[in-house]
Length: 209
Image (cartoon, rainbow, N blue to C red):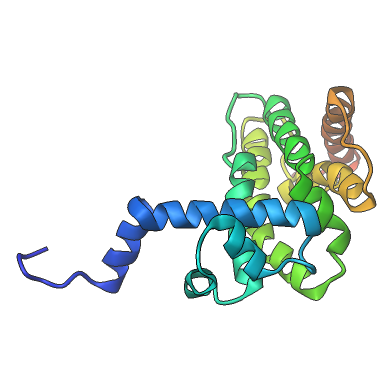
């Protein structure tokens, strides 16, 4: 940037996210939101209470997140970062186990436990749908690498494997049940991987010649 040149809006936003007081305010607000969600859930969440707990003015929150849904989406995205990042151990089984353990740990958080029964609420469902793509893409990439390495048969659907493996945990969350243990996670992954191989063996082979 030339001397005396006014920074663009994008530059200012990038600098704000990078550190300084703005970054601290964002962290305080998202942390306070997560704590409130863990206590009262989405429907009963009040931005006023978040502002008080974060030690900021309510207008400070609304400037960054115009609606409660925007605030909660940002909070869930920040909290869900612990589940993100596709591992690459060289084994599709180990990669899926790592990710399933992360999902189980995430599911034990008070925020997730309180919000899951609210999935029938249209705003909560919309928030979940907005976060779904990023969540699934990490799993899909892991399964696709397994197919590429020959650990899973060609034609295996990475999205179908993802949905089956993760639903074993998500189903428990929705019902408010205890999170599964390590043995359960291993059983789910092994069953799905074995099923993928068995399904491929049943497919009719293309005729040659």
